[in-house]
Image 1 (cartoon, each protein chain N blue to C red):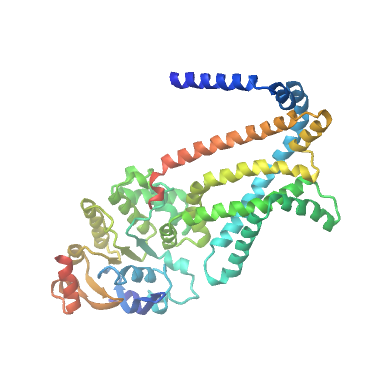
Image 2: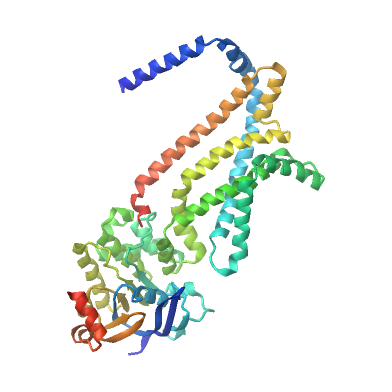
Length: 244
Length: 257
């Protein structure tokens, strides 16, 4: 498999604090990669750097065969090729669910309004939110908001989905519906890089698991191997603390 | 409800009786609240008031536009825009510090002198009001823009929206709700300060009242002009309350995000 997204030697520091210290990571087309690691290990920063939501200090990022870490490229265009979902949903509170979902299509991709709405409604129908299309986000439960946020991210057919701990802010009983949707997207062949603490989900759905520790990749491999029979002591330590 | 009405009426009656029986009340009444003078002065004062309204209407547009530009300049990020940020900050510091009346003198008498032409007082008034109030309003706008949580900007940029699109579609609509009450306060403040253009020689409501006062040695015209300004302000105040309440009920969760 050739990598769709490939980063080499990523460095990122916030002031004195080095958050990423030479990370190499790649995601193949249609691959689901789970990014695990303790809080502060650099998962979120890595996702943001890959999606050009944060500038990097050093390293290179390739999307397809384009060097997207080249400062001369149009970063907005590249961002539009990613779909990002965040821990706290970050839906736009002043827009209805449907307007949230169609904003990028209309404004960035210049799709005619009725066309964008048709597609938005079809996607909302698929995730069971079509009845709430006209509502503002505050009328929705956390799980519904996060599913709406996922629909917003996939509405423009992004090449790679970056999911940043998208179930961490949810009540436990709402986690299932969101993970189920991610599972469906994975089954449909989406390319997904997701930071998560849901180890069971990572084992079942992700093809590969990457364990990030102190700003660097400590271990990576097939999900069953990394989660079931980790080679590195630090991975073992992390998983044992996690499952305890 | 009935109790409230009853107590209000009783209170009003007591105040009225006390005031009317105070020694010297009839002198006060004659000097400040003479109905026949009020009625006679009203048409001229009203004509002047229309001039105030014109200056105000034009200023709303110019202040809005200038303040938005200044606020946008102050919220720009990146080292390239440093000089622009400093300039905008210096401007707001300066014009929030200078008393409005000094701006009015400098603009109103300075510009025509330097330019050597006659400029209508209405234009000079608008320039002076714009210079001062853009500084205040831009600060309100900046605070409103910065009160929108950074995660909103992040989500918009992640969708590929450009800086301008992010501002227009995501940040400003949310900022507007947060800045409506303080903006309305500045607006009411501006409505009153527009009365100061009388010192430029424009015959506005205040100047018209002054002329009448000079002729009659009676202060009622000032009260009439004052009442007109109050009547102008009340709808704005009520509208603000109504608008804020409506927005709050519609988007309760907005500030949590």
